[in-house]
Length: 432
Image (cartoon, rainbow, N blue to C red; front, side, top):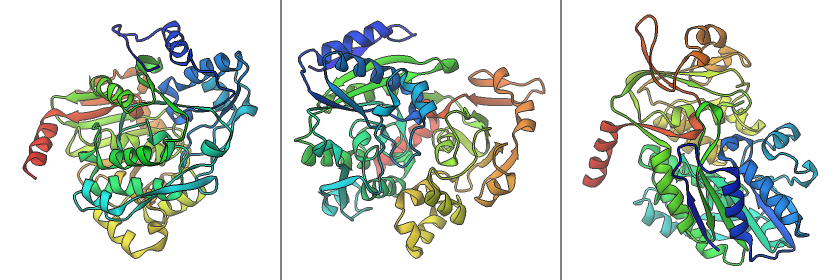
């Protein structure tokens, strides 16, 4: 049974409403063995942790065997502490770890001809469709994919089949989907549904997941002051669950500003953001709201590295965030970038292309290291003394010295756009 549930209250759905919706969606199911694929700790505010906990207990009370395979993609495996914080009293021993380099099997490929068609000729290589072997060979008669729909720099709007093909997918799909998005242009993608990368995932879903007993459980959330509000819950097997979630997320998670931002302060919670790989959401999600010549200051007390694994970290340190054209040239001339396209795409996404200045204020990594990859750097304590997260309101602030700044407490939960720039981009797309 499909469930589309939206709250009319600003504080969102209650826990009881969420439990009832999950019970309703799973009432007619009598599985013996279930795999839940929830978001990892980097999506803490998805409310996927609570939903996974409810599903786990609901199913185990019926006598089901239930395993948890977090959709980590290329991120670090979830730790015991993170798991407990996010998923509550589910035994940590139920966690399975996905290795995107080793644990996958190839189901088929998305043809280059199709990708050329949906990208307007920008991309012509085929893409392997790879997923964790457990999806088809783990003996599961029900698989629940849990996650949040929110504006995203690679696919446009996150989750749905991205949770499968990237979250528990393999190297070729992860690398090439990210590169397709980067080459096509993230400002043409963010906040939209039917993007080239989404069409890539849709093709893979339609052609290769037909035999997979898969149900999607999608949320739309906000988190003012860190308090999760679940505005919508959408459960089902068809693409319509994504489309309903996208429509609501575009209302809840896109913040149109009526003028370009000259100075933007973004805070990265140290429990959630420990790398620039994740922290650069501060760049992706604000760039469409920043004026030319603006300054983006990223308060990053927990950032202590660049990549989420050693190889990605090495490549980022080697090449840095040097701008789209430079990275594309390096990509064509360097094998390690071609073999790690997702890193090349990340380097493109994380650069301002000289349009605005990016300053990381850090304490767990040296300022010299930050500067070595192309960012400006500053001491966290010094910057936080002036732009204190505890004293700033979300959105526009006028400081005691008269300076105007725009403050974002968590960049993962939205997309900020200068309305005039957005309208201009739409007109340019119409004329292409």
